[in-house]
Length: 104
Image (tube, rainbow, N blue to C red):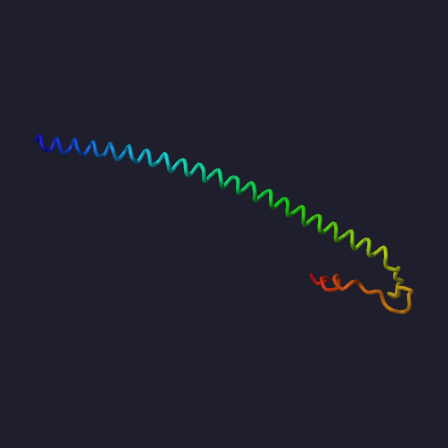
C-alpha cells in the first residue's frame, strides 16, 4: 500500500513539473505569436501604403500621357471633314505609339 502511495506521489510530482514546464513553453510561444502578429500588421500597413503609392504613380503617368497628347494635338494642323490637313494632300496620321496601342 505504501509502495503504491509512493508511486502515486512520484507521478503527481512528475506531472506538476511537466505542467510547469509546459506553462513556461506556452509563455515563450505566446511571445513569438505576438511578435509575428505585430510583424504581419506592419507588413499589411506597408503593403497598403505601397498600393496607394503605386495607384498615385499610375494616375500621374496617365495624367502626364494625357497632357502630352493634348500638347501634341495643339501642335498638329487642323483636319477638315475629308481628313485633309491642308498641308499637301497627305492625310494626318496619329503617332505610331498611339496606332499600336489603339487596340488595347
